[in-house]
Each structure stands twice: as C-alpha cells, then as structure tokens.
Image (cartoon, rainbow, N blue to C red):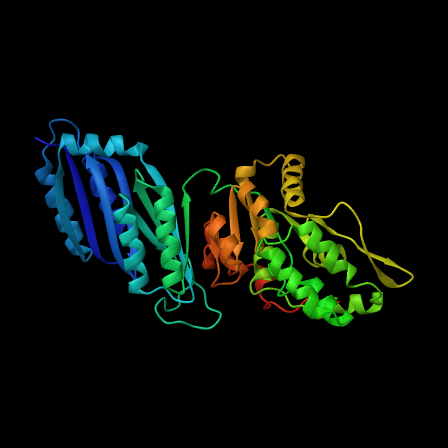
Length: 417
C-alpha cells in the first residue's frame, strides 16, 4: 500500500492557512517531498507531496486535514501516489528547463493559447505561469503599459530551432514578443549589459541628424539604411557618410545633445541596472561626443564609439581609426568581460543593426531591439513592442520589485545638454 500522497488545497486565500495545515502534518511526522503554491486573484491553489513513515495509517491524518481545511474555507483533494509514479518524478529532475516570456501592451487568451500550443507541440510541459508586470488588465491594450507573463516549461525539447521558428511566426501574427531561453544559473546571474546607442538607447541616428544640419540628409540616409540591412560593409559606409559632413560647424554638432530623445524605458532600465550593481557599456558605431554625454548622465561604465574629427571649429570629414564596426564591437565586449572577470554567458548585448550581430551572437543573451528584419532573424532574442525597460523581465525582475527605487520616480525625459 502506498505511503505517498499528493494533497491539493484550493479556496479563498487568507493568512495562517499554510501554518495550520503543515502543523497537522508535523503531528503525524509527515515528510514534505514537494510543495508548490499559486495565488490568482486572491484564490489559493496549494499542492503538497507528502510521505508518511513506513507502516503509518493515513486515515487519521486525512481526517485531521479534512477538518482543518473545512475550518479554513479550503477544499481538499487527496491523490495516492504509486511507487512507480514517485520514481518517475524523481528521474524527471534531469529534464531540460526553459523560460518562455510573453511581452506586449496586452496579453490575451489567444496569445496564451498560441504559445502554449507551440510548447506542447514540441514535447514540453508547462510547470508554472507567473505575471511579472504590474496589476493592470493583461487583456486590454493601454498606451505605454507593459504586460508580461512568464512560463516555466520542462521536458526534452524535440527541436529547439523549430520551436524558436514557431515562436517567431507567432510574433509576426500578433503584436507580441516572445523570449525563449534555457533556465540556467547564468539567467539569474547576468553582470554586464552592452548597448548599441543610435536607434537603441536613443530614438534616432546621430549621423542622420548631423546630415540634416549639413544639407546632405538624403544621401546619408540611403547609405545608412543600406549598411544597416547588411548590403554595404560598415567601414566603407561610415567613411562615405562622414565625408559628406565636411565643413559642419562644431557648434551645430553640440546642438544635438538636447534634441534626440531617449528610447522609451531607457532611463528606467539603466537606473535599475546601476542600482542592482550591473556593469554597463555603450558599444556604438555612432560618435563619442554623444555617447560620453550619456555616460556622464547615467554613469555608464564603458564607452567605445567613433571620434568625429574636427579642426578649426568644423567637421573635417576625415575618419579617425580604428572605426568601431561590428567586429570591433565584439572585440570590445570580450575585452570588457575579461577586465571585469565576467563570463560571456553573463553578458546581455542589445542592438538594432547588422553591425550589432557579432556582439549579439557573442553574448550569453543577444537581443535585437526594434531591429531590422535581418537582425531579428539572426539574433537569439527579439523585442519590438515594448520599451527598453522590458529587458528587466528577461532577467526575472518584476514591476513590484521596482516600486521603491528613488531613481524611478520621474518619467523618462529627452537628453538635455
């Protein structure tokens, strides 16, 4: 006869329930093999896998639990567990574990149905679901609101690449981002965030804004777009664009510091990362004058970008080597990690262009943020619908964790000179 039982309690949540129930178990010397609790809209679901000493009679314990449950307003369901089922549960500890994060302005039943079907189709079981965003309607789209649901799944993935492809197809069908990552110690122990700057930390390309001032916007934009699509080698495109800026007064260049706004959520993200002790870096094919301005404002630890050469108060149109292209971004990322004694698995890199792919693919987690199609398809993760602060969900930070951070009390504002 079995001496292992699964106890399931459900009902309205109230203080003291678990203390009362486990007190009963203590009186019968029951060993708790597993425990799990979920709370949805103040309704409790509590599961306990217990084992009794050999030769024990379960009937008195069941009677005591039933009486106490009734007094607490809970319903009790008891399921005997066979030795075969227990052995299967023990062996299952070696299963692969994954985290699937759904992010959008809203998360609907249709979204959950599509994602959970993909998970099941690839042989995984959903073990736990948790809301990471604040207490807003997950089904009603609200401007600037974040909706995030995190699923924990386990099993032997039959085809990880195929599952990623299915998730990507779902993001193209819905206004939804889906992050799929293996659960590991590194997921809970990231230490360095590296960012591209233009169109990632800030809303625009500095070189394009300079081109408008110089009256060569159309020419520069065409070269920029071609480079970001991967059609022109970055160094060549950079030399062409900078050459078109020749003669632009330095005083006009400095005007940009107060004109290009931050990307939604950038201030909240960086403030939180610095408060939590993360190292941060800007690795940009843009210019140092703007990157250093952001560094001074936010306390960014490292900056590697291109120097805009000037002489006699004007832009020379010359390029100062070495140019920070995709390969150099990756090399600088490795160098920073070495200096900080950080494993690359502990690094998160974020960017939007083709020249970001080397560092995105090098980092433990590479995120294509509001990126071009080529970058979204080739990066491990892609975020399009929320602001930069949604990256916090991917490292397990909940909205409620941030409520008391002083630096988050003011909304994001444009970068000021």
